[in-house]
Amino acid sequence: MKKIYFTNSLHQKICGILEEPDSTLEQIVIMVHGHSSHKNGKSIRLVSEELKIRGINSLRIDLDGCGESEGNFEDQTISSAVDDIISTIKLMKNEGYARICLFGSSAGGMAVMATALHYSGIDKIGLKAPVADFPSHLLRKFGKEYIAEWKEKGHHYFTSDDGRILKWNYTFFEDSRKYNMYDHAQKFRCPVLIVHGTSDKSVDIEDSKKLVSLFPNGRLMELIGADHGLAIEGDRSYSLKIFGDYFKE
Image (cartoon, rainbow, N blue to C red; front, side, top):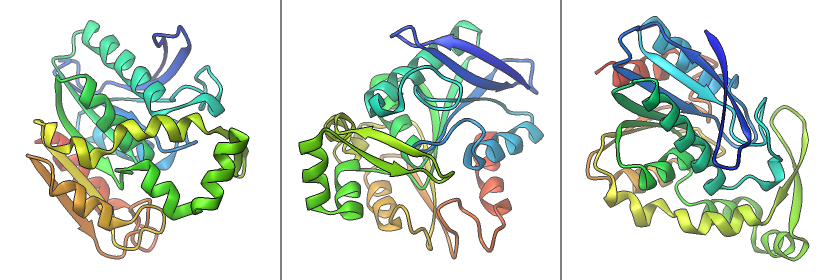
């Protein structure tokens, strides 16, 4: 395990954790965390550990404004996340990696899908309970009045899963309108695997059912009784095996 630093196109420092059990540099999985999380969040750290056991290289990153990366969280958008991920891809290509795969958790799933629209050389994509359409998702979650107030004020505050109170600019909502994956899914040519729990209270599994039907080469694994973290009664081993098998194929 090695901590690395590099820069995005805005010259912000991005931090990542590189795991390289395979010295051939044949394949690497770039891993992107969910909204307001970080590179050591369970959803990507545990998958990274599973990949390491299987001899698969990975690089999990902090998006701008998160974890140890520079930038302000309040300014983060899907577009800025795409910039971070493309900068990561370029770094790994320069290191000599032949195959680039992407893994995204929740909002990170949206970010890696958006990246694939701008960077065509992705080998395969793995998604954990991804957000497919942020405006619709946020409208369902908060309601029209809340969104209208957010727009009027230009920002709002929310409490993250780890108890931090974070400022979130309305520019995120405006930017996310460009990335409705129901409109773009047919453009994907690489394999896409979605794993989603039937007891997910954060992102509706029906969104993934709709999304996977639009991918030319998509597959959905529904985990009965699994929550947003893909845990079934606290156990994530089944979902870890699914992603491990997928990236090992």
